[in-house]
Length: 262
Image (cartoon, rainbow, N blue to C red; front, side, top):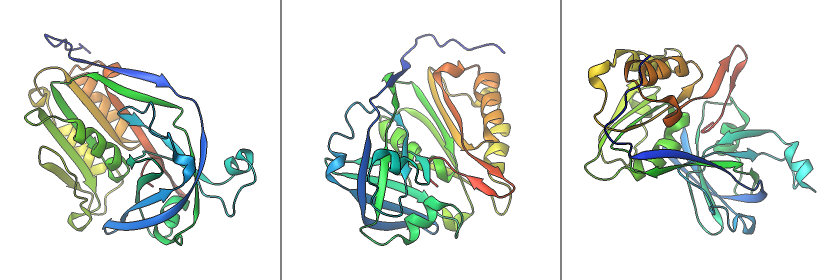
């Protein structure tokens, strides 16, 4: 592998640890963005100061207690999943969920929990911040990565070189994303998770590499990591330390263990 050195390094990824805090919130709103994809808002005084110190790539752990926990230790015993916080204010937080029937505690809660239901929020433990300005952006993921793709897309300046790939079940399940460039939607059409995205990544060659200092983000089911690294670090020669390539969830025989938007 030969890493490509752009003429000018225009950005860096700075990772910072944060004080770990736990907060209790209540569900106050639900909005179906697309079939099987829902945005919820939780609210509570505990969210004061939530956004302090957050950067461009953050993950929290959300907890689904059956009743009001008597302590942080009791809250942490509740079922939980890792998520990307989408938007937040002084006392509110928005999250998005991909919902697949009755699979997964998070999706079921997002789709069916009565307004007023409790949700615990832990973290983030740390944050990743883009210092400087990438000359080009490459964002790719499945439904679980949409909240993070939204956040990165909002940071892309008008006129910057950018490419965004999003895998969804089919055309009916495309989720609108506000971005400065058209989003290329990839349809699984019954294939395995990440199959359509992996196939698209495999099709991209050295000549498809954006010009300049590129920030790359790729996240979906765990199988995408190999293809993502082969493209970014292999064919495009981008230093993997200056990219984010993650398996946000892992499929298994009994269902799935989800991170991010499930």
